[in-house]
Structures are given as structure tokens and as C-alpha cells.
Amino acid sequence: MTRRQRWTIFIASAGGALETFDFVIYGFFAQEIGREFFPLGGGASAVTLSFAVFAIGYLSRPLGGLFLGRLGDKYGRRLVFAAAAIVAALSTLFIALLPSYRAWGVAAPALMLLLRLTQGVCVGGELSGAVVYAVETTRTRPGFLCGIVFFAVNISLLLAAGINLFVQATLTSAEVLRYGWRIGFFVGGLIGLLSFFVRRTLPETDAFARAEGVRHREPLAVLFRRHLAPLATGIAATTVVGVSNGLFVAHAPTYLRQLNYAPQQIATAQTLYVIVIALCMLVTAKAGDLLPRRYVFRAGAVVTAVFAPCFYAAVSRGQADLFTWFVLAAIVAAFANGTFACAIAEMFPIGVRYSGLGAAMNLGLAATMGTAPLAATILIARTQWNAAPALVMMSCAGLAFVASFAMKPSRAEESRLTTDTRECT
Image 1 (cartoon, rainbow, N blue to C red):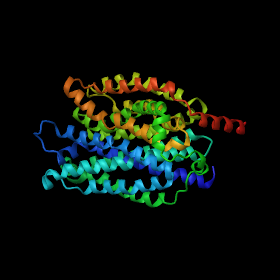
Image 2 (image 1 turned 120 degrees about the horizontal axis):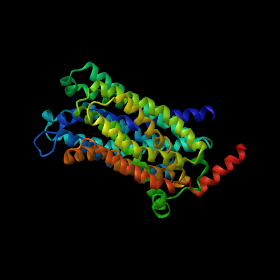
Image 3 (image 1 turned 180 degrees about the vertical axis):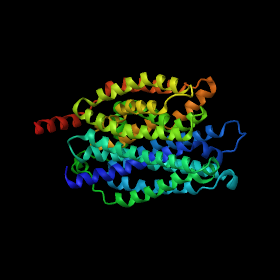
């Protein structure tokens, strides 16, 4: 790779990292956010209402993926990738500064919902844009470059986990409720503003610049008319990634605290999870360049379905070794997390790649990552069974397993990969 290509991957990876940060911070402090913004006595618990807003924010991301993806396929990746950063960053900062329900009444939760919706629309094109940059920056090792993008995403997740660990270790429960939970959103907003200024230096991808003859006047119309099968496949494949992140990362802090695990123990276990999955994803991403990517992804769906009931049966007793179980969870999740994005991107030709990837990833994540914590919370309440979240994870793993049989590169992409292989030989 040239120096310019390395810089492009670095900036794109940093941009994709922001996509995860606000999601993780909200999950870490969902209990405090629920108490601050949602009054009790309305027929649902504060935690349930907090996760409902969390889910709604994710449900708006497919709109962002479609809208920003269309602009990215029509006008270029660079413009969209930079513009999405500034609005998302400002929304995160406003959440950090938003007064509570006690101060503003019903306006406070209404504004929280509006800001989460805005974040969802803007961030809907962030991670898919980073993956497109990785796939189109160089013709060799696209899987490993996508792995670098998700490595950066997990570094941002590590930053979020570190902030959570710091807040839990240095502040009392009352201080965390009063102002401690806002620290993460404030840091995320500042990182977002920095990301916007840096992204303005990004060049357009070489593949898009060369592809003038295959661009479409209305990419979304072409996507839904000619590429519905890979779109449905990508959505189904993404569900296993969304559910693992939604449950292991966002839902786990509140879930485990209700089982009487210590907050510092939970934060440390999740920090280990982030470190291990970041490293393992580089390995599985590289394996996806050496083997058919769908095979590595399929293996991940199988081991997830087997591991989920074991994990929840152990931790639901309230006495499990969280460190060991979260390390194992990271190894299992790395198979799908390290391969799904590149495999989906390769299913779409350049003319609709941003739109197709943005729609597939965000629809799949919205259906699982945003709603899995809410579904798990409701399922536990209805069944009175603490291991019930395993059923949600197993269902998504089964769906992803079926989808893996259709995860094949588009004809244009397959032809390009064959040509590259012959040139390397």
C-alpha cells in the first residue's frame, strides 16, 4: 500500500470507530439514563424505557444508510463520509448537556429521543462508508483492511469501556447518576468534531473515481430493482453480529448488575472482551482473504449458536467467572464480526455498493443490535428465566447460518478478484 492509501485507511477506520462509541456509552449507562429521563409509574420500568429509546435510535439508522448511501453512490464517498460526522458529533454533545426530567419535564425525554434519532440517521452511513473505503482503497487484502476498520471500532469500544471503568471506580453511585454518565457522551462529541476536521483531507476512493461508466442516476432504484437478493442476504447475515454486540456489550452491564455482579467486575470483563475481540478479528479477517469469506462467517454462526446457551446458563447463576466467559465470548464473536462487512460489500457492484452495504448493515443492526437489549429485558420479565437472552442470540445465529450459503461476490467483483489473483501469480 502507498502512503496515501495507508492514511486513507487510518482516517476511514477512525471514522468508523465513532459509529460504535455513542452506542456503547448509552448501553453502559442505560440504567442511569433511565432514572434521569424517564419517570417511574408509567406502566414500564425506567430501564425498559431507556432501552426503548436506545432501540428507536438504531431503528433510524437504516434511513441514514439508505439516504447517505444513495448520496455516496451518486456524488462520491468523501463528501458524505465527512458531512455525517459533524451532525453526529453535535448530537452526542447535546446529549451530554441535556437537562434531566426533573429540570425540563417531558421535554427532556422528548429531546433525548430526537437526538438519538438524529444520531441514527447520521451515523447510518458512517461505518458502511469506512468499509467501502477499505474495500475500494486497494485491490489486495480487502478483508484484512476491513478487519483494521473493525479493529479501530473496538479500540473506540475499549475507550468507552475504559471511561465506564474509570467512572465506576472513582465516583459514587449518586455521582454517576447525577453527572458521571455524561462524561462518555462529552468525550464522544469531542472525538466526533475532531473526526470531521480530519476527514475533510480524505481523497475519493480510486475505484469510485475510475467507475464513471457504472454510476447510476438513481442508485436506490437500481438497488431495489436488481439487487434484492444480496440485500436480503446481507441483512440476514448482519443479525448475528448485531445480536452479539447488542447483548454482550450494550445489555450486559445492566443485566449483570441485576444479577448482583459488581460494577467494576463487569467493566473489567467487558474491557477484556474488547481487547480479545479486536485482536481475534484481525485473524479472522485475514482468514477471510485466504479462504472463502463465507466459510469463516458460517463457522462463526455455528459456534455462536452453540456458545450462547452455555454463556447464559453460567452467568445467570450469579457466580460465574466473568473474565473467562467474556474472553470466550470475544473469540466466538470474532468469526462473524471479522468477515461479515467485507463479504456483504463484495456482493454489490461499485455503482450501488455504498447504498447496498449501508442498507444491509443498518437494517440488520437495527433489527438486532438496537432491539436485542429491549427484547432480552422483556423476555426475562415475561418468563422469569435469567438465561432467556440465549434464545435471541441462537435465533439470529441460525438465520445468519442460512444466509451464509448465498454470500457470494457479485459477478463484477468476482471477475476483478480473479484478475488480481492472476496478476499476483
